Each structure stands twice: as C-alpha cells, then as structure tokens.
Image 1 (cartoon, rainbow, N blue to C red):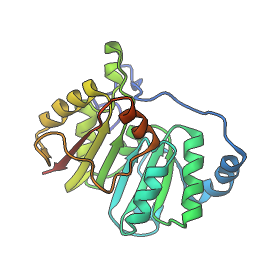
Image 2: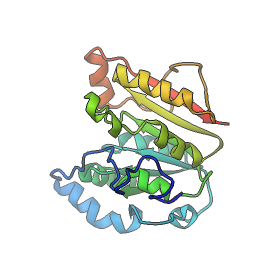
Image 3: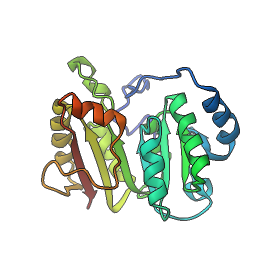
Length: 232
C-alpha cells in the first residue's frame, strides 16, 4: 500500500487526517536523562519507509504493537510478563516516551522498543502479517461529531491494521467512552476478516493492567469496554 494511491484515510491533497494531537510537555530531570541515554538503544523515529522488525529487536519473535502507550506503565508490565513476544510502543507524548524508556531500563526489558510519531505511518511501513497483536487502549474519543473522522477506529484504519496481523492475530481495543465503544464495535464487526472473540464486549483480560486513568474513569462512573477481535 502506498500512502497516496490506495489509502482511503488520506484525502486527495495527500494531507493525512491526524488521529492525535502532537504533545511535547515538560519533562522531569529523570525523564530527560532517560530520553538522552536510552533513545539511541530503544528508540525509533517513525520512518518514511519499511520497518524491519527482526533488525529492530535483534531476534525473530511475535510482535505486539501498542498504539498510544501513554506513560508506558501498562506496556512495561505486559512486556515483563510476556518475554517471548516483542512489544513495539508508538506514542507522540514525549514525557510518556521518556517514562517508558526509564521503566524499560530499570526492569532490564530487552523486548521493548519505543517509536515516536504517527502510528498509522508506522503500520504502513510494516509487512502484511507482521504482527501477533495490536493494542489500542483508551484512544482519543474525539467526542465532537465533526471530529469523528479523526478517530483511529474507522473502516480504512481497521483494514490497514488488520492487514498487518498474522492470521489468528488479535486486535484489542479498550475505551471508557460509551458512544465510541458502540462505534468501535460497529466498525470492527463490519470488517469481513475480523472475528469477535466474545460476540460483544468482552471482560478485561488479566494481561491488560488497570491504569490510573482507567481507575479514574471507573470512579467517575464510566464503564470500560474491551473489544477483542481476531483475524481470520
């Protein structure tokens, strides 16, 4: 797939509709140090071309793509408990990237790499069938109707993500925004190559940690919906 001829998520003038707000933010001294020391080892600027996952991780293993890893706590926890798979986290929030790098270093995790940039651009650079799983936990709901086109879970994006999954691979989404959860389910159900693992909203899998953000959502009375689909 090229980024101009075949991707319906990109309008005719070739300017992609972004699904995120670029976020820099202020960093602590610890985060600044982690970014400076660890980025050359674990970091990846989203490239304008193919991504060689074997070269990136230094081994051949199943790969989990974490889109929007936030401060990285969940990614680090899952990667530590799942050493036989590699985790590629992509984020645009620099303090979050720095925090994840620090967590990776402290835990001695060799199976995590962190990418800075647009997740969809990263996915376009991956071969078809390259991923064992894609995790999209609590993406921006873009609640205003005029912004719904910016949501990451929409047909063109789902088709792209699904194409990078290996057969039997998992697309796992979670949100605390009820309207977006319903829209996600409708979109995912409509993809002919995805199968709903639970026939509806599923339980939170034990491997997905409960984050501070999620606890706040639950305290505020916003139930969390998990949607887990597998590629045929």
